[in-house]
Image: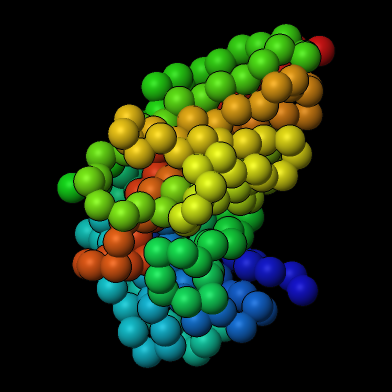
Length: 114
Length: 116
């Protein structure tokens, strides 16, 4: 099992450009998440998907959109990148959407917006 | 709103020293508590978790944490650290079943540097 995979690993964008971060999991998990990690801020939830076909906003959704393409894949889209979106983005998944479920994280995508 | 406070931003210890990292949360109801670790260049991994039962939880690599409900705390401990424990440690809380059920609230993290 590869677990949670993310592509790309690193990306540089210019302000205003768009891009999609890809995430896939092979653990047959129902729930998937996108976080951003900034120095001194910990991880903050952007969006999550309780199950295939549903998505919900997290703590910091502005400037992002998501698509739960199927059970395995959950993508994060930046329509018009801004320097404030420079961050490390982590995808995670869990068996189900309940407080007791452990989330498993991917390796992260480091994004630099100039 | 729920929040998680990790008191130490950066802790520097020598090998074999004992470790205690503080974590306090703000929520009065039922909580589920987690400690995650991020080794340099790697993704987050679960160290241990508390859902219910014995408030002293043992995790991987000799780590343990104690849930003290009256103090809203879930401090991480290890009796003797190793150089390989150098990492960033994150406390996280998920409270109850209402609202954003999947929402883990993370603390800002504590960097641990262990000197050989």
